[in-house]
Image (tube, rainbow over all chains, first blue to last red; front, side, top):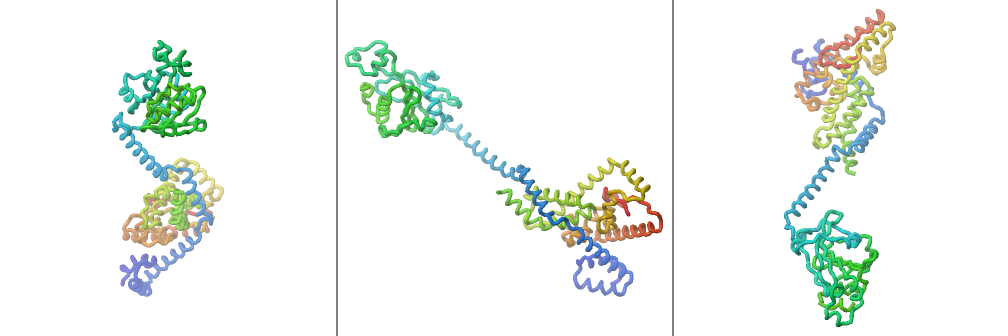
Length: 294
Length: 206
């Protein structure tokens, strides 16, 4: 090996990058070459100088801890970048699910039973809205189109449907309502029929003689009407095979139950026993003369 | 909880190299404070892009790449800073001449271990000083240096060869000037870059 071959390899030799065979050849050359020997000595000096420098350039003992604290601060200060990328993915996924749900709800026919009412009115607000006139509908079909669900007609013996329509809710939706009037009291209040005058008048009929008895019946998809704060003031009873929640609120009595995939809420000024009898005739489907017994 | 475990994993992989990274930054920036800041910034940058790190790849090489970018940014700021205050520098230089006292910057370097080596390294271009420091301070193999700098191994070899030659020249020059200063009254001289790519914040040769 000559100097031209050896000199370029002195650096790799110094850095330990040569294999044993090449290293031995160069070291053999250095022994006999003063020029390369001088070069090698200089490289060794520099290497020793850096070795010393390396040992003297250490950070403080707690440097790693400080970096660790900085990383912790990074996490707490910027939950956005990395973490929020993860959060954003969850939000986007949730938004997609919600979007799909909305799409599906629009694709479902408006009059289908499967449509979920967008309203969840509380009993108290419905009772208080008793005096409000609902948005009248020409017929049951048009009412169904307003509310978004099919309307079930209720037949209550001796009670006639006076109006039916939809009531606007604060939450933005609509709920179907039928207003009944006691046929007996209504007829006696206007022009007493011979049949009515022939039989002894009931107490209800006597009260209704001056003003016809009225009954509000709200109807919504099952699970829509919330018991809300009145839940504790309610008594649950089994009437006609259905669990009926009965209670009073202000000067009204009310009854809430579910039947035929609907929630029904009856609001009246009837005494509780009278309301119970009325609900019983509706629930068991009997065409009794409950009203007449009042 | 999720952030915590992620951070722990990052720390487990990277913190063992903190000391080595500091050494590289120190000999490149010639300031303990700047080196600490640079390494910490490199760790934060690395943590922010931890999701891009491929498991199984060389952690140290990945960190070095990021640290070199941080150091380049830091040196660039120094350059701008120097451009903004050239007059003050001149005044300081003149005053030091008159009082025969080193300036505050020079005083700091003089307190460091082997200031001649520190100053000489500052005068070298980054293309040479980076492979040299990775080899001598980080004790990385040629292959690792090539990976960190994104150059072939052959380039690493040639750059190391030239870097050592240049460093020896600079140290010899420094030694000559020092010996002449002992015979003549002390006269400050400003550090002149030998290369366009040299450190913008170059220090004065003692």
